[in-house]
Length: 262
Image (spheres, rainbow, N blue to C red):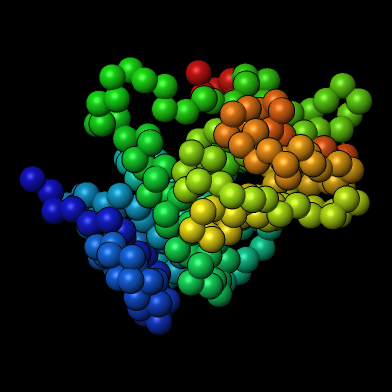
């Protein structure tokens, strides 16, 4: 039987590994680590991990090549990509290449703790080895929608604007949603930029990255008085923003069509 760890850290900076490891130790996660992706692949072949945290810029195989190699080997362990080069392009490419989430460096204790909790919960929800007696774990996006990674969906409306919101599985990775923090109306957002904070019962602030770029023209104020709409009806009544897209035709090509989830 394979040895098991909660988390594998892959980063060429020992100081970053030590920082993440200390946070994991506080949360009682078991951790292994390596300074480069080639060794990480060897460890994955010998050890079972629930989650991988991987840097982008590393000597030899970089984080994107690592994601591609995982896909080629049919390894579906959730991956969080980290980067000191926290550009929008890197965030989009990470999520498009199969990363579950992206976090820029430097990150705070709360930021990395929250994202680790969410991604470990995602792994539990999607683990095919767990017998759930055919119960529905989460509801996929409607077929005509598109999504960025597993978290944010977009639906183009008849007037040319678009709704964006949080997917059902993203919401189910959170611990008892308590409140939400919107951006101001008329704010311009870029694809893969944080667009809303969803606050959990334990105080964790969970960032949702926008599926598209554009200008916010409306936020769903009903959520402020009934936050549970997010959980009850995330794809319709629980939408987050209405946005005037700035480059929808271009950006939709790097989103995942929700029809492929069926």
